[in-house]
Structures are given as structure tokens and as C-alpha cells.
Length: 194
Image (cartoon, rainbow, N blue to C red; front, side, top):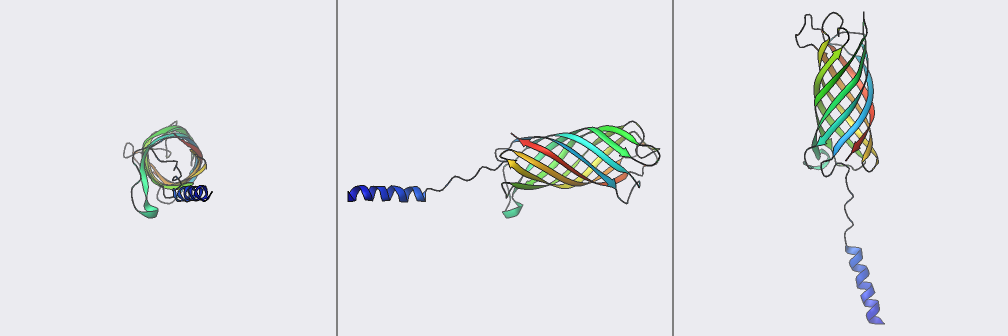
């Protein structure tokens, strides 16, 4: 009887010392990101004034690296592209509708947390509109942006994504004048990682 009690005790101690598995992080194993978003914003000083923007898009991204870095800076690098089927600008003189494509969105995901993953992003692309943006310039413009965002994981591989960014719209000298539009924009969407 004492031998059985000793065996049970040893098995219990061995089980207690076995480390529990590390919880899986949603951006481990370099997943693909597929998401949709809706956003908008206002022009800020440094370009054409009194412009309001509304847009929506679809994002395809790919985490390219494993985690790197120390502590709260630890993260991974992601490339993403946005297709923007609706880009509306309420601007002085004449409003514009258009669409665009951002083939270069470079993201650093801060993966220290499992459920809330902030990120930094730089990106750019092209915008085509039905009328000149700003009025009297060009119907073809380039988009560049820098922003910060947050993936809030509500399911193991699905997140509500919120973002704020500074975006510059300019024709890059394709037409004269080239006053450009600077804006602060906010967006919200849903992202899936597989």
C-alpha cells in the first residue's frame, strides 16, 4: 500500500512539474491576412483645405518573418496590399469618386501580447478618380501614408482592426499646379489570419 501511495505521489509531482504548453499566438507560423475595412477623415494643413474623405477596401497580407526583437518591441514584418473600390472626396468646387490600389503596405506587428497586437505601417499606391483631385489638377494621383493600428483578437485567428493614418495625395508633378491633399484618416475593419 505504501508503494502504491509513493508511485501515485511521484506521478503527481512529475505531472505538476511538466510545463504547460505556450499559448499559440495568432501571427505565429507566418499567416496570410485577409480583411476588409471602412474609413474616412479630414484634410489637415499643408495642402488643399476643406476636404472630407470616405473610403473602403479589401486587404491581402502575408506575415514574412518570425518574431524578432526584445521585450515590447518584439514583432514580425508583414507585407500587405489594399484594393480600394470606393474612394470618395468631398472637396471644394467638385466632389470626386474613384478607386485605387496600394500594392505596398509595410507593417511591423508588435507581437508581445496574444490578444491585442499593435502595429506601425508605411504604404503607398495610386488613386484614379472621375474628376480632378484637387479640383483643376489631375485624375491620377499617388497615395502615401504612415499610420498606427491595432488588431484586437476576438477569436483565435480573427480580429477587429482599427487604424489611424496620415495620408498624402499628390499627382507627383503630372499636372500643374500640384497642391496635394494631406489628411488624417481613421478606419475599422475585420481581419482573418490563416
